Amino acid sequence: MVRRMTTKDMLIRPDPADARLTRRVAGIDQSGAPVETSVTVERPLTLYLNGQEIVTMMTIGDYPEYLALGYLLNQNMLRRDDVVTAVDYDEEIETVVVRTERGTDFEEKLRKKTLTSGCAQGTAFGDLMERFESVTLPDAELRTSWLYRLTHAINTMPSLYLEAGAIHGCVLCERDQPLVYMEDVGRHNAVDKIAGYMFRHGIEPGDKIFYTTGRLTSEMVIKTVQMGIPILVSRSGFTAWGVELARQAGLTLVGRARGRRFLALAGEKRIVFDLDPALAEEERAAHRRKGAERDD
Amino acid sequence: MVRRMTTKDMLIRPDPADARLTRRVAGIDQSGAPVETSVTVERPLTLYLNGQEIVTMMTIGDYPEYLALGYLLNQNMLRRDDVVTAVDYDEEIETVVVRTERGTDFEEKLRKKTLTSGCAQGTAFGDLMERFESVTLPDAELRTSWLYRLTHAINTMPSLYLEAGAIHGCVLCERDQPLVYMEDVGRHNAVDKIAGYMFRHGIEPGDKIFYTTGRLTSEMVIKTVQMGIPILVSRSGFTAWGVELARQAGLTLVGRARGRRFLALAGEKRIVFDLDPALAEEERAAHRRKGAERDD
Image (cartoon, rainbow over all chains, first blue to last red; front, side, top):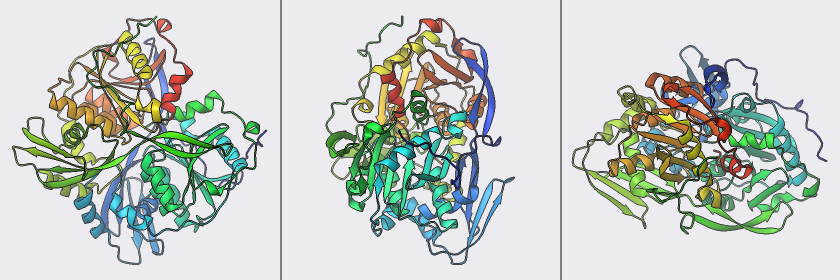
């Protein structure tokens, strides 16, 4: 049997009791009867870098500072050696301003995006690839015993998903321990919030494992590599380009991780098979449901 | 019992046998044994409007012309009364060029996006809201017998999802009949392909039902309203702003539609309860799985 995880050592975990993050809404069910249900709240957040408006994001709004920093890092508008002098969040006017010592080159970045990628649903790949190609991921280990404990702990942890659904989750892990668990309505906000947290607290990426509820697309692979994390795990499936990029970068890519089963399609050499899969717990239906409503 | 749907009347349905859309990839499973699996292929497609580069999208690449038209329509770069003189797709250099009779205002649109929303993960809301506020959705009917037949038919239809996973699906329906079923890796590509198909073939939106595997976010609601479709159905959950916008626009919003169950949180008046839910089929576990891997 797999040992139950405690969350006592976690740095950040979801706070489903936070009343700002969900709202009770009235409607009807399949029999026409009136019902009330919890829905996830999304709100706009406009991000400024040194006084220049950059983007308006839709977010649940729980960690605006981390989201702002992580967004700028993952868009390569902020460098890892930049000195951030202030991050000012104003809840009333829904803005967050990041100030840096160095002058930033966001104007050139924005222009480049307009010319090469417009405002796609997604991210400007030209920019992302710049950093992607310069990263060398370290040696690291993913023990299957850790993997089983992690997925079990994450699946059973109280979360906004369980409260209201329609949300994505990402978890930064070390060995068999979830460290930072972020949720958000926006596809990349959860990733960006973790990147912002790591930057703010100087967390080293080289011995970490990144878990996502979402699919292992090229974008997800590029972001993980950019963040310097050598291992990416998901309960969802793969895309062909995601696999190709992971192999190029030497990223360990584990997908369809559910209960006893998983598949590794890149970087298999980091995996240490130290637990007989037969000894791992199968997922209960209640946890499978979790993924099902996390669609987008 | 719910009558089984045939797909003989469908205009477009997924073609999981299309060899270009999936690739066999080698890896290892949880026991370390070598395995081969199918993964969805994503490829870049660069869109030009009248010679101006607009965006590079990641897509499975099955309907580049519809995707191009639908993207431009849903971004309000193409008007519904525009005369499209040509849509030229070049598979080798992965480009698609849309040519119109009228000069287009994409330069202003692109500039506006840079200033107001940058290149977000998502869409520039300022632009979307322009059209959103001008749409009046028609009266229409959603019989629960249609809803049950539709969700059953869609869940059991052969699809890329069943072949390789990691994909989204959207289906344009009329009464109890799925008409156009599009899949894609990109969150909005499936929607845009349907919008492009409707534009190209002059399909009226007023009596249609739009089904999505994804969450009922504000963006999904805005796109459906823009397309003029009065009813939006999903197997996934809601966000608070999605519900609010649907109520503003008078859109019928049905979520968590699985087996016998569903919830309506807006536009309930269009729903006609003509079938006892007890007579509808429950989802089998195999179909529930479908949603689970469609995460993103």
